[in-house]
Picture (cartoon, helix red, strand yellow):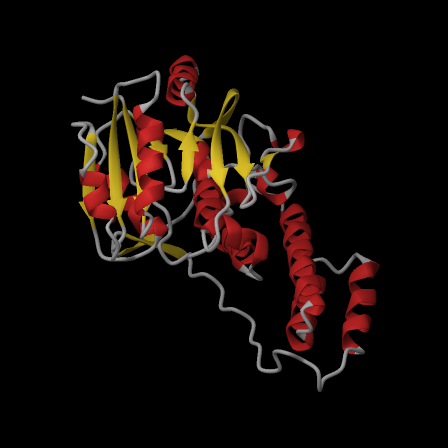
Length: 326
């Protein structure tokens, strides 16, 4: 029985997934299985994976449903005591599993361990992906409403018993990992492991690149849902949550204003004021946006996105979540 199940979701990335698999096979630690979850690829991903002759590799093909559904399928088919997540465009360094599993074996009261990561930009430049003030261990629920922890899915190893019956929300297409870790932070403590790292590759069109370029309300909707529906017994103080959500609305309003989206910016800064009416800068920004030209508004029909429902969708089912104190 493998101690670690490495789950690699992939979609139309035959060359990259081979490199990801090879980074696992090159580990100093060897008691693992690799579950490649092919999320409906229409390229030669399946053929390329099957060329790698190693009995520890298990290949699954499923209908396209997004990275959250692929990860969920992997967890459901895993056999290991630990679950290691690795996106198909990322890479492990050679001692990653040895160090991560060792730290979890030593610290049995932690349900998740996460490491540092290095960003590899499209031009080959490398940069540290984890700032020192985000390098945290312990109960991190409130941190998500302050300076959010930098936890990359590919840089995590989870104790399987800690996520029993716990899934990624398949309704969320950008930021599903933040939602998952936020909810999980209520259930278990997180351990930051500075001794190892993974390599995150920024490639044209991948999720990592989207985070840098896409105007998305996903983070706000995730925080709002937690605050409205899952913040049982005031786990996160209302004042802290409102201030954080207000700031995120203001940030998104600024992004839309720079893009010339007048209507969107006005609606978003008004939401920011509703959440946190104590910052005069919000009102000053609203006045500036109101003076933007209506005729030059690039999105005159923009509508506020619908809030997330008080449940998640996983494995084709609606799962009601009511977060309980630990």
